[in-house]
Length: 318
Image 1 (tube, rainbow, N blue to C red):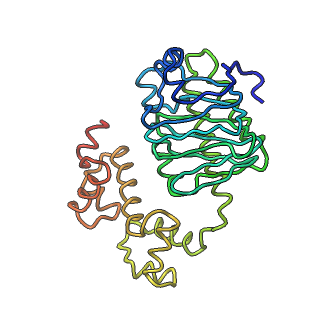
Image 2 (cartoon, rainbow, N blue to C red):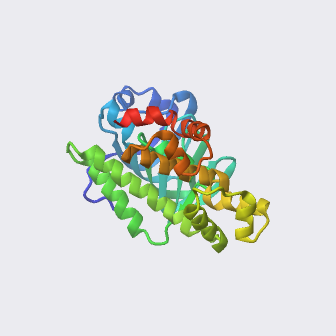
Image 3 (tube, rainbow, N blue to C red):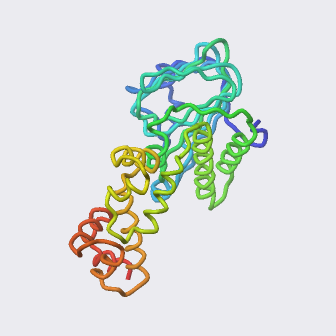
């Protein structure tokens, strides 16, 4: 694995207290984000191949996901890392041996094919269980990663599992190899491939979730989308679904992330946005056309969602 990538390497046994006193360490981490010594402790035992982040512009760091560091490690029995309050997201994958992760008050065991995706701002500890733990650590930050994590991973178990290594490993090596190249477009392609990796992790978790969207929820979504400009009441939607309105509201939110009312409002606002961009229709006519009962209601909801009134929104894109 990782045969075509040039790594830095080290081996031995190091404690965080010793490393933090080293002048060589402070030279190495210059311009690289690391956790504060007050929120970090570790013992590094075994062999490690590693990469560090490349210099990037502030704009690139703001808009693109980037690699803070990457490590491929064969860790000994004393190895552990404990930290919190570190602005980073960590994807760790186990190739052999065994380790554990303690996160959000739960301890998980990690064996071959297991990995985790965590927010390192939360307190966590991961360590070897047994004599050896072979794993890779990919620290990421920047761009939309905080949004992606909070939206799709924060309320789930951090653990993922791949029965077949190939797809995950091939994509990971593409990311690391791209990171290692000298190219003006390197940061863009690293960010693009990291988004693909995050999508793969999400797909893996959703495939392992056996709960399917009920047929009546799918039909109800389609019904709302085809009748969003009409005055749709909860009683009418409940009647269409043939279940109680309270159960219908709970189930709809569970599977779509929105109540039926919120879903209708979002659909109308997105349609109104398109009409503001593509037509010269007056704002009040657009509001009525997409289903709002009054101009005042349209403006109130539009401003709450987009942060500006329809008039200011149109001026901003003209």
